[in-house]
Picture 1 (cartoon, helix red, strand yellow):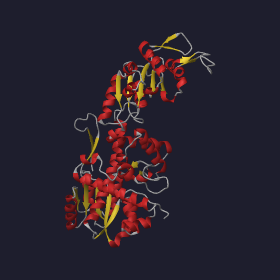
Picture 2 (spheres, one colour; picture 1 turned 90 degrees about the vertical axis):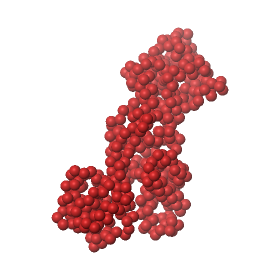
Picture 3 (cartoon, one colour; picture 1 turned 180 degrees about the vertical axis):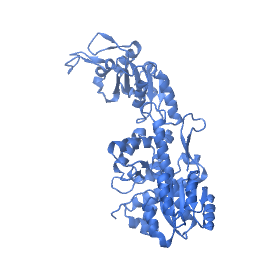
Picture 4 (cartoon, one colour; picture 1 turned 135 degrees about the vertical axis):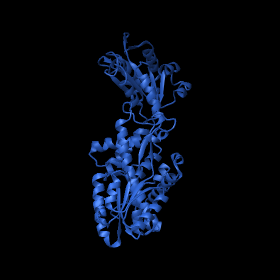
Length: 491
């Protein structure tokens, strides 16, 4: 299954992962079975190649790329196990499914332990069993390819500082930020909490001529009202109770560098007046002093509130707003650039897996669907926290829905992910997909939501959940595992 990266029409630099139909190699010395399997898989939108023995398959693999090899265990000359060894050694990532007569099941199990994806016993129980097994193997190959591709994109993509994203919305942010960085113009960064306002400010500083000088950041809403002026502009000894020594303010500390004023809309009125003068005249006056000091400071301000509404309410100076709003940069909410979620998720996965020494390297398709469907009220910061949480609790090399903080509530039972994240309602991205793929994703999302809700209703009791689902316990466990939902092993 080939993955390619190319911009969407009208989206310069934006990345979309596009998937070609799975390529399957059927290897069996029985001509009738080869033809039957080829027709079946072709009818399910798969590209099928055939070989009548292991030697021919090895030769074919040398010149053709495939995702899954469906191979008979017992063949003359080069048999299924030898072919499995060859694929494992020379074609990493290709999944192998063994076909075997019932009497050779023990050997097939050994093959699975040696690296085969699965085995099917002949005669097959149904055509659907064959198609589902091949489809799942191809999906696993696709997952590995996507992870590798995203890793390469993380290494090769044009990033702006620590900002990550290839959506058209982020390309516009890069364009504005890179354009204003070499200048001394004041910048006003707008965006919800967690969208990366400070990262953007740091990136602007890092691409400017001031990069070797200080970058000073302050959250205006975190400073006590009676200390704001002193914090920004400094004070002299004795200027107020507790001023036991003369102290420079943040403007002086940021001289020849950049001062980042986060949540600038929370500044009290008198501090707004002094800030306006500092921006207009390039000079500051310490509290309690009549002496003015010249400073060369580039100001980047940020807010998550509507400053115009605060101006209308008399809580923010209009003249200060226009002085700050020389170059406005609006950061999109994460839910407005969902195509960046896989890239960001793998970036944070690498970051926290490396930091903690965790073995987790991949994100399952079900987990990625939950990430893509989540509302992300806290934006990129919330996504980062979710991935860090999942890395802590993941005990395998693949992250599943159960490790995500909204995949399981605090009582240990599976969470109602459908209710909390809208998993039982189609999201807008589904309508951009081909019918077959959209239907497949919707069905898988339904299965995940169904089992999550059922297990929550039964408080994680597998036997009771299986009874309510109308399945025996072993089939229920297999179905739940296939849906990517974890159950307790001690029940």
